[in-house]
Image (tube, rainbow, N blue to C red; front, top):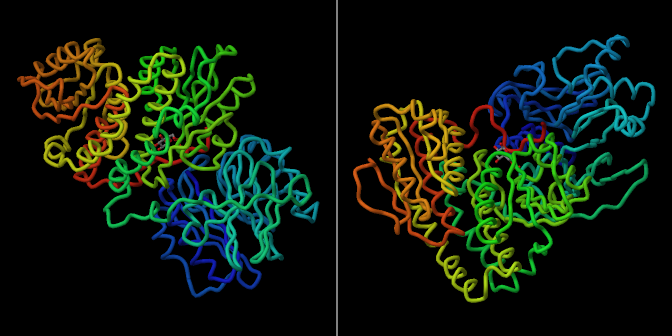
Length: 598
Ligand code: G6P
């Protein structure tokens, strides 16, 4: 989604901001722009498409020590230069993340005041409205304090005001950090934009206003200056670099075994360590897992694990539905929100609904200090480091691992897993990183070659394997643009099997021994209709047969963690297929890494 960077300081603002925008490219965008002040005059550069198009339009000999930049992911108004940010109306120049929901009403007010608006965006209206208030107030802080009662929706603004030399920022429900350097300061929608320069930052909270000079940062709340904790971002810069890989996605797939090993070392030293890190689950008799995209798919795997190992009912729902559903909470409900970014608007809204109903919440999050991480009753961090590729891999895998820890801890607390079973299970976790490593190194190029020209690819599985199928199918369609559907293997014959014709690829996942025979029957049904079957099967279930064309045999571990090895061939297949198709793997069209609007 849209990205923001602002800079004030000793270096060339145009260069620093362009560089920051490049670091934000991964969020997904379709146009970009920069505004700087030069001799007290605002200069704006904008372009549609990639940052390299913007660079062609910029004269880097222009000296400036202050400016703002933006990558836009269109919501209101199509992708064109007029709609892209920054917008300038009157004395105000700004960039915006979020959506101003009451923009139509504000627009009518501005039209009555003779404001000439050029774009189709809510942002230009916000800019105009801030200018309108500022012309009356003659004090930008007074104005920014007023907008919280006027603007509905969400916003993070970085603002330049004519005739002064400060950088201003404020936010509501859209993240913004203020970062501190040496004789230079920054603001950004997320950390990778500034990680190259500094790792010291303040988290701006809703309605706070930041005023940045090159050697000073002032943060105001309700018009009073407040002291905030200076935080240190402890991600290694390496995690945001490609390190010789062709794509971030491939790099992130390759990081998974080591990251899994580190999280196992933190959580599973012994039973006591695990239990100390977890909430007391005994008091809950039902769990709602709420998330979006791949995090939702992780939740579906979590449901199988928690129900199996902790005998506790789990409901899993996508957050954009959950937040508007009639919800049946009771005091023994725990709501688990899963989110890599910790900022997904629907997931955050669902968390807040649970809190308003006085329901305990647990967040599984990657980004430290994100809104979901801070607002949940308890947060478990997955420690994936920066994930840059839009299509998540390592964060999803670590979410599965964390859900397995939760199932294990809950099972122990509910006295369903005794000490000796725990020790047995632990041994499987010890073997897991090596098994994942073997999968990461598996060469799937030939299988990818056989299917990359197809228009439809189906994924089937039952139970936990169906949950994995959904993620495999999502990965494929996200980055290769091949139409794909995942189906519970037994449901296929109720309609979708009509789409199977000679050589239609069907990727079948079989890791669950309890329903092995049933899934194999379903695979035979598609094979006999000519499907090109790629079977992904656990070693202990592998038998020869004539019902598949390709076979990927996965070393068996334990049902708590089998999914962590089984998902890797699905990630690699999607990657190799997208590579053969020449797709923009790390930045697929229309997608955003962090979806901060509804
Ligand atoms: C976007 C991303 C997905 C992600 C989903 C949820 O759609 O492209 O990869 O799974 O948002 O994001 P979250 O940050 O809440 O996990």
